[in-house]
Length: 211
Ligand code: 5GP
Image 1 (cartoon, rainbow, N blue to C red):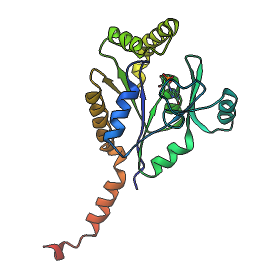
Image 2: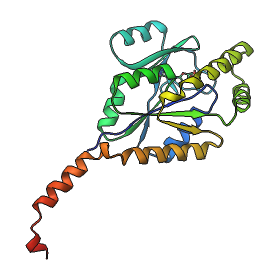
Image 3: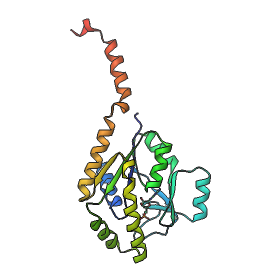
Image 4: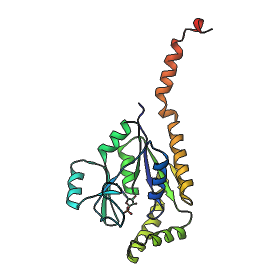
């Protein structure tokens, strides 16, 4: 079986990564959304094991030091990390895996894996992004300011990604990412097995019999 893709999705806070990934996963059952570990507290409505695994900082550090994480980063004062084993298992089963992670974590994945596909989600305008950060209403004004400033800085990372998708409308953004997945699977570099099989098959065909 062909190994699944490793899709990394980053973008500034408030751009709607979570909503776009939700639509994407609900419409593409072969996608596996990797649930991260975090040391931050759950927001209203968030569930342990669904949105994140909420763990104390001590446990996070221990797991990190034991090599349990594919990547990790400190974002807005909290730790976040991707459990490595599940990602490997899912990919080996042929599932495409989505990591919704920050730009620092993405840099580590780029360094440690040879075949990730890196997608950066952009807001249509910065004004729109600020509105979305406000609308979430779960953060203090100081936190909002910090997130907006971080979002502005994160735009500098765009050049390290393979694709940019603008999230003006989340169904369209999800459809664009689904199209990227299809295109990536058609890359010649990922189709070497098919080519090998066709060559072997073609070389063994008895032409006189097939006339
Ligand atoms: P939030 O606390 O708003 O859910 O997420 C804050 C930021 O942390 C977002 O940019 C999100 O993409 C990032 N993040 C979530 N999980 C991970 C992870 O496992 N690793 C890294 N590096 N960043 C993550």
